Length: 506
Image (spheres, rainbow, N blue to C red):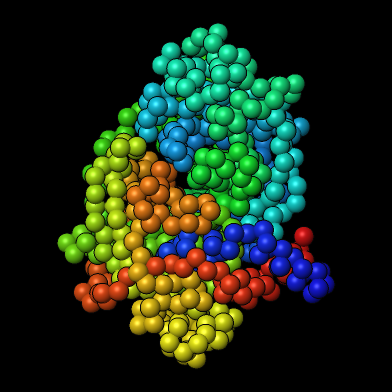
């Protein structure tokens, strides 16, 4: 690929991507990353190595492979009750055939434990894989064509709730004569999609696809299907072109054992939705050291890992967010460390078992993990972004004395309204769910913007000791800026050469 064409494509990135979500320094990502690291053993193989984490299953040396284009054939199922923005509660079972046809079952529930089914959707169509995505590395773009969507209501109450959300024309055409347990057609190739849109229904998630195979050292294999993220704004979800992922589905033939939810979802039908077993209540206790289970993807070219430490006695927290260029988290770009305080509020009125929190940041430190980032930060004016001229590869700088860094979009002060929940995984290990970040790059800086869904869960490593700097907080707080000019430069410097060389492959 010529350098001129590559420059043209890079300029296209800045047009296509909301600049506010390109890196953690924007107003969407106050802090985003852990102290573990990834190594890549081949072009398609990654191994997760958490040197600091004492959890045995994180030290087993899981090897991950991902093929482009992915092989979709088979049935893929939810591993837990999923929470989508809104909130919506559902389980999914998707089957893909070698002739590109697919059939999908989505079971919706009235509450967050997926015990009370409301209705099920039967979706039929075709999917065609396109080219490798040059926006989200490691993903494949796809297009779909719907042929039929049907619905089965599971109670009269569910029918009434759904009817209250739909325009009168949809109710008279689709729901008036529907009875619980009987399939009814909502859409076919001859009908319009107005009723589907009114329901917030969309399978735009199939626009972005990635399949990973985990090869465990004990010989087991787990295969996961990542489909595109669901927009956190209900009004935009039906038109959203995904650039990140949602909770992955697992292949029914290659899944974690034991997985009771997998079996229930696999055996389900539109008339027999899975009723998940009630999970034991887990009291929320943040104390200890929590880390990402995998390299995580956020919308718009964000690959990262997270590492949180909480000290409930002081209501103090530390978050380390390490950002990378690639889905294996093997090519670091920069690390952001945030410290501050938090306050726990009331139980959530929307999500059973979840609690509301307010987080404040009192100190921010940044480490440039490559020469390009260090060079960019050294170009800032004195007193605006750490010690001007002193940025070095691998050397941490405290941004608090300069009230943040406009180049990275970090300003003082900041407060965010969060949502946390704890569960137990299949091994009875604790999982910590934190609120999903807004897709549009905004910040949940007021109560009405509090998340209604979750990011991928983190696992508890150990109780650990608190970081020494927890006892010496700076009184300033951090606000992320909405400005993006500097971030556009950062994207060109950080992503430029890697993106061009990667595009040459395809």
